[in-house]
Image 1: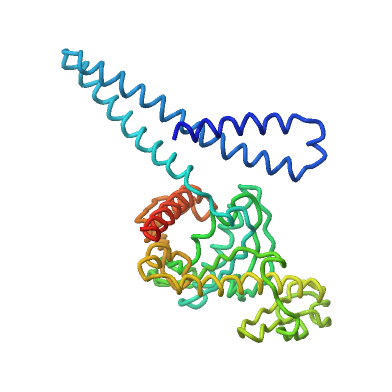
Image 2: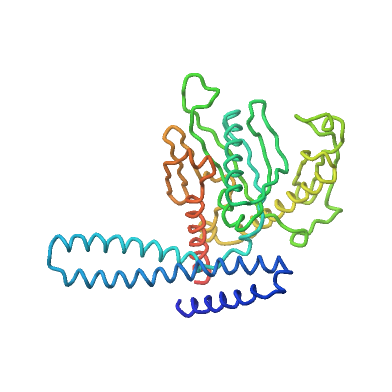
Length: 359
């Protein structure tokens, strides 16, 4: 580990030299890539240094305890020693997570699809709440969010919404949101105060470039139609809605949010590429052993992953047995604690899975 950390320190020094050069500022993309790499390396090095410092403190405190005979002082030292051990374990686990190989898709943009499931209007209202939660979280991280398609209800709920989020570590942090999100609360439409259980399905797909997923024009049927639903006069009079059918797979994508037919087609193709990648990824997963699938199967959109219990202000993620009693803050976009735990769990799962695969 020490040798690896020394290599990281050397790379940080090398990056510092590169970004200090005058010609580097002319290549903004390269500059941003180097700064991201430096930030990741610096976090690993700083965490390693913290473990080393804590190890020294632990050693000194244990030595102090051995030489102390006063009962009151021993009790104080033991309490401090316990706190140091807890902190050391926590920082050491963080270091293990940081040094694990990073997903090559980590910084990819994502296409998220939220659909109301069982629960009627209440499910649609919760779908709108989830979209608001993710949009607020995206704002807090200065990510870019773009709505690609949306179908609303008369009461302000969302039957279905498809949107993209782009920014640093977008896929890495959001990928584990795929699955069924269950909500337990008293609906606004419920007069008797009974708690209802509804469900919303979320899918998170990495957005693929044209060069990564090949789509043959002959495999597409493109239909143009008049947009429907709420909107201004242009929506009602312009044949701008686009429906693309991928003939080999039967996947159908419909976009009508833009007034421009060209823009709707471009958005539909982006969604189609993401769904085609998902289809291929599912085939790859299915080809692996049942043991491996059980270890890394985290993207199944039919799997119940989380429960939002509003009466108890409680959120429970069933995959990692994490319960938070701050659902009010979570729904405002405060989901870093949850996502940090999921990212760490995902890396550990992948690490253990690779170990089993090599065994």
